[in-house]
Amino acid sequence: MRRSAIVAVLTASALAAGCDQLGLGPHEAVSAPEQAVQPPPDVRPGVGQTYADFVSHPEFERYSLHALGAGAAAQARFAHAMAARPEVGLLAEGGGAQALVFSGCAPSGCLEGLSVVAIDTQTGEVFAGVSDLNGQEKLVANDRLEALLRLTSPSQSWDDPVRPAPG
Image (cartoon, rainbow, N blue to C red; front, side, top):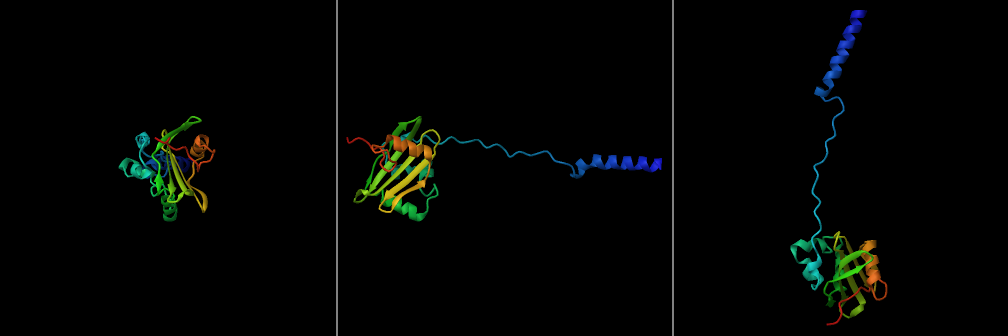
């Protein structure tokens, strides 16, 4: 009996020692390789450009409505509401935030339709919206940038953004 107990203990020890080799024991966690977080590009060179000109640059294509995930209908609505009078981008600041803001109006004026895009200069986050005869729609929502647009708006509304002073 004693001999069988010793054999059992030795067998159990051998099996336990071999678990690592057989891959039966717990494994060390393997972390995914760390990817360097790329800072957003400096969007301030967009000051003085229209939105269409701005997103035509390869480094700023990520800010096009298509790249931001807006559907075809939303893109068409946005384009119509910016078609006739695209304003050049300007910097809006307030409440500790700064954004590059683009806006524009529909062919018969801003009451028919207005589009706005705001890009946070520090984080690269975006707000995009359109206001037209079909109502207001936030195509890319961002509470912080919407608050900045309201803060800098003459009427405290995101769909009435600050515009460049007439020159």
